[in-house]
Image (cartoon, rainbow, N blue to C red):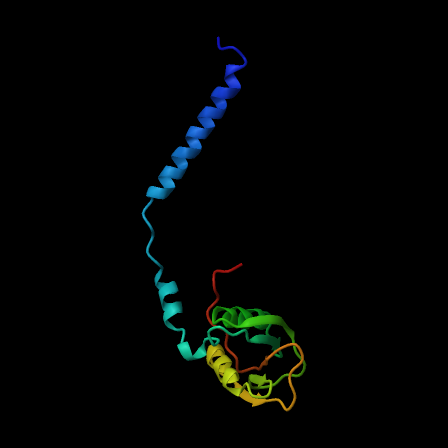
Length: 151
């Protein structure tokens, strides 16, 4: 029979060995290739649709349709393209087309947002938009990309 003082030390040693073996197995596991879906999703990104490098473009997305969840889906899409979506939610009215409104002098950014979303029309506001550079109002014409695996 082992003395009581040795048993806790032996249990700790066994646990340490098991953790070390697990780490070694994980480091030696082969890397799985990227899925075809992930490759296709990356390939569909048009560089002209990405937010300009080194800049922060603040966007607000409003869902003005009867379909729930579109603002969240558009937010994911724009964030994947490098835009800083600072707010999203439901919008007023029920426009038939998606509208992208920009602060003065940012029409080119609005065109990039339209490309990232896959459609819409751009208008330039006369005065700066409060808190954001771009306001997206999703209309009935907007079709979300295929559902991602995100929670």
